[in-house]
Length: 448
Image (cartoon, rainbow, N blue to C red; front, side):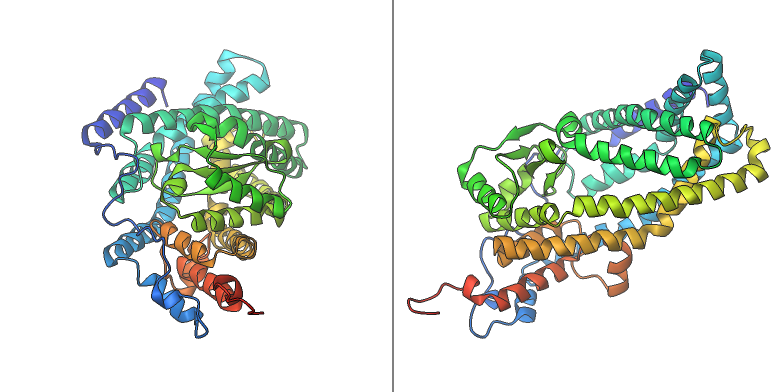
């Protein structure tokens, strides 16, 4: 695929997008169908001797306007189809690179530039990253830009959004180039056991990226500042210290320059560990909601979800590489000559590996979602016990319902949800409240 064709395709996409780009949303300005900001407890969820968790859950859900619920359901259900379309578009792109000879041509260009194998691999991977980005760009611009604006979840105009996309592309070229050169080096030296050693290299690489991300990658896209408001930081830091989290500061990220979504996290390892809240949460969340959200995030840390997740996904990566070995060997025996791929160590095999990776992830979606959803539920329960803010948790669930369906069916939630649904989160919070009314309800003097 000639360079000039790539550039021409990108230029056309940019001109088309700029011509029909929606106006920029002002940070702080919410769509009319946004979930309500709830700072009080509805009558049906008030702590009382007759408190009922089911009735309290329905009382919170009744606060959601019908149009907001309809838009949230439409947005999330549309995402089910996007899972399919992402797979189809990537598969078509990879098959084009293979069957039209573009992958082999990119390898040949790299070989003409240098005879040094690692550098040939790096040049090819840069070509491949750009080609794959361009071929999938129409779906990317629809899914991440136009659709987000359509549902009132984005705040950027096309120019800044495209700037972030280019930053992401450069990061992919750097990090993907490093990982790719290492993997192909392993493949060339260990023809029989490459898949096992390749899995090990990938696991180490993922851990290193998680380690450096909060300090070195996040600031590329957003401004991260130390939060100095004691009304916010003191309760959060008290909560952290009470739960054995060695945090001295709380950080704020200016996510509102890109989105209206609310979020927070405890990220990194060791010296790179930090507590971060985005400015949407700080602006829209009540103190109780912020404490509940941070209790949840601290639950991930205290329950060692990062380490448990690393082990789980390490096993998944090993299974993935075993599948890649089988799939690549079988495909090259049948189509390798047609694709002009010289063998497993040929960088031109990359589109085939990407296609097999897409198939694996597509099939594994329910399993991966279920694992993550289980961890999120555990963090919810820890957060409730740590923060003692069940109504704050319910408020947060409603806010997150702006882009997550609140009341899915059982199978629907199992397949598509990587977090518990809003209804389940509110119900869990109300069950906790029912069992802890002495915490939720002020006690009169002398009450045991």
